[in-house]
Length: 238
Image 1: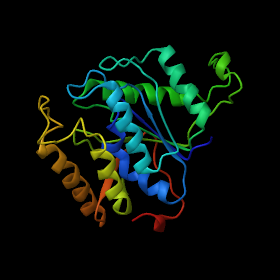
Image 2: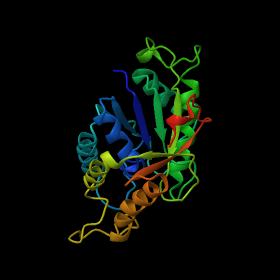
Image 3: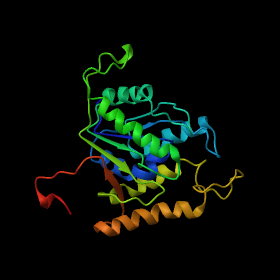
Image 4: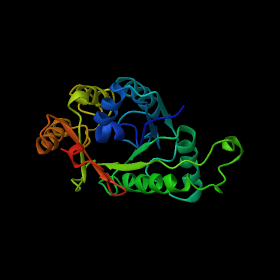
């Protein structure tokens, strides 16, 4: 299955927080979108890997994803070596996405930066004709996405592209809340974490509103482009 947009996340819920609105907007327009989680989030303070699998599947359904897979890299120590790059390159060749979204280049959680590096390098390797991805994927042709973007997470990094997600904001928040074990729940008996606080959940909406304000929309999500953004017609830009 060929995808238009494929989003990678170090952990289940990363994509929803950083680019859930973008996926929802494109899915609603008939584009094929999907998510690849690099780990099962097994090192998270709250929840279990099995519960997080179920939550991730529900969140993907809400966003309109046609696929969601998990590569089961170790949480907390996502590798960036060649074998890990090959595993990600296999997925890229399998789904041939036009656009790849990935974690922020640096962030509060060290896995986010490592995941960003891993996916960016795998996107390049995936386009090499002499790259051997193993017998299982030997029939897959080289593929390199046309565009690669890094979504913002905990840190306020400087983006160079901001996407209007007004029409997909409700789906974004519903997908975030599908990860019930991870976010604010006053009835939960599990330890409180930074992202499980009410303030953090409120900040997700406030941040989307603030980025929307900047581009004259109700809600928006910012992106860092791996390459320079090119356009032929200046009137296509806001």
